[in-house]
Length: 185
Picture 1 (cartoon, helix red, strand yellow):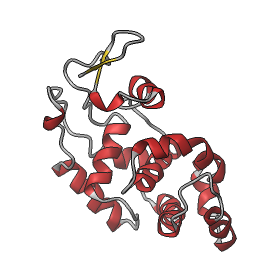
Picture 2: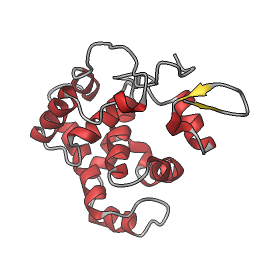
Picture 3: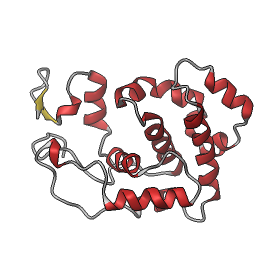
Picture 4: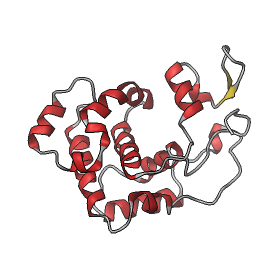
């Protein structure tokens, strides 16, 4: 556990060291997220985070939102090669062609779903469990995240492996991995 000197609140250790991390921890991480575009944004950002520190994505999130038209599924699905070129030259975001193309492809996969993205993703939320007491008790992959990733891939999504799916579950409140002593309840 980490205690922030400014307010004496006990937080999960990863929230230490950056006001941006602390604000994300306190106000977003683990809070339920619903809605097609909001969940699509999280799918994209988790994919962009793959192999990078989450702080990198948090710092670039406003630029990502601008570059990807607010992550409105129908707008991103309409992106073409000119948009890929534009995004590859945007120094404000992570310029990884595979991840950019995956985001566009994932928007098209969302459009092709025969079920609402919100319903699909939340159907993999596990039953509530006790909060972990230590960071070591927090899994990186679960049977539910593995099943979610498999289903998303079956439906044409890319950059959605089991670890990324579990991070998505944590970020969107499908699971609550705030440690037992963390002030966030």
